[in-house]
Image: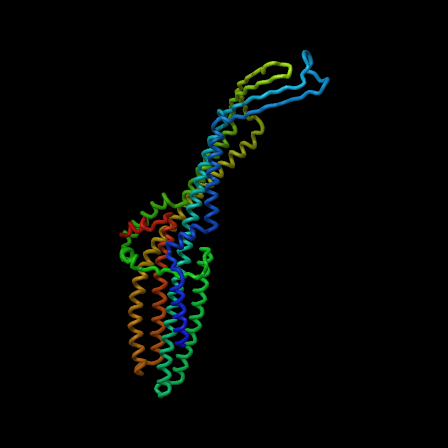
Length: 440
């Protein structure tokens, strides 16, 4: 078994040398470049900006050119006077809406808000993509650490079994205890297989998400980078935790894209109410046209021009305008309560995320101390078992405690990193220094 493990280690080391090391920063850049959902939102954002420009151009005058050419059948004259065989005319028309119940202006403002919603949607998808990358990246590293722990546990069981074999052959260990250690070793082999499977799956998931080949090696995350912040976070008192919550909530009100989208939706529906009310008002449009016309028997073109002020007043149907106005009011009220719900939900999420961050930071220190004690205890128990001072059960209990402590410490590290990532996403920021400056 030792030869098999040594072979696996050598192959893994060679793979490590040949594979390109993928950092977390590189993974984020690749995801932001390749993620199809994010690319779709980017094009949706650009499309919304063109919709805004189209609606804005409706505010300026529109102009059109037209021309006609007419041939008359022989015998079909013009009535009195000379008979024409053909006629030509051309001209232009300029139109300017003066007042349409605010529809054009409000329509432009609504499209402007819609473009801002598209921007916020893109930012939201970008933050979601970054959070997904970090989560999958951390899962690979966590399973990698758990795999190393499982391998160490199996190696330890093999050593114990060798000791037990010597003691069993010399008659200082019962067959039941010897079988118990053999069963423990077999159980750890199963655990190793399960962890290897989880590790392989997490690697594939990250590769698929990044759209890259699976033959990569990840750069490990050093807790030294977060040592100062871990120490400061875990030492926060309740008053300081409340202050931190207040600070991240203020940042979120300004940066969180989901909150921005809810606020802009409310603004759009408010403008829609005003626009629906404008359906009851008269509309006024100004039009100027000039035309040049000439029959074939004429030497020169005759020009004519016309200036029109067109007013219209809505009379029937009134019911559908009233229904549209009532619907717009209810849509606005719905968006108002949606905004309040989003604000409350994000605030609650931020409070939970901050408390989770503090708890996970404290857990890192607690599990680290527990691991140190468990390692020292196990070494003593292993030596005592070698010298036939303790029973097999005592040794296995110490081993279980050591394995559990290692796994808990590994889990606490990545729980802290995930909590940090989740908090940044809710705050609506990418740069972690914006958060870290409040933790110094």
